[in-house]
Length: 208
Image 1: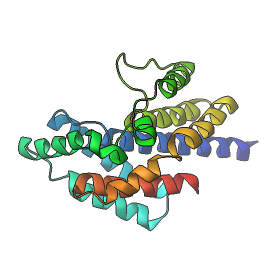
Image 2: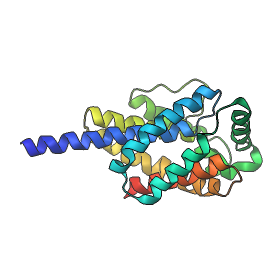
Image 3: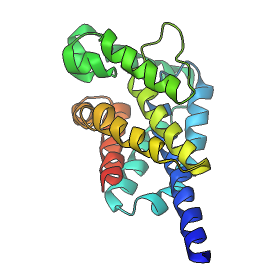
Image 4: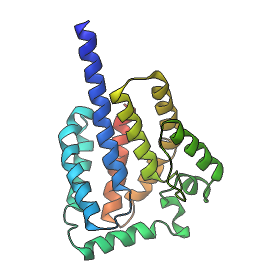
């Protein structure tokens, strides 16, 4: 009985750490409106550095996190913030479809309302209400939802949530984000090239 309890606690602990990890990754894909957004990201990075060895023991993933850290830590004034904001804006240009941070745009070249409706239904099923006017298939929202599902599992294990989690990863994470991340690596933008590689490494760990 005691061993089963210890195993359950350990499993829940891993779920919680994965929630932190993917929350950090999601935040990295949000447009940074102010320096405080970067300060929050840097704060989360310190926590991720601490827990990553317990979630993923792959050296390449640790190296990828350190590389991303080298890029974001010097962003500490408005000139550097503006440079980063320009990079985010560039990825939203029509000619940059393969770099689009929206699932449906990346896949088919436009915002798919059917996909958006399906995602909103899934979010609501788990108690989340999408922001009005916001497309629910932005990479940051998708990874945030992944983080949220792990958080739910860390609080209370539920087979239905596990099924939704696995289905969600197959349909909305694994089938396009690795491809996007590979494209980002080739960009002449240190932030996105390092983030792309980190994304690939973290998803590889998630699969293994």
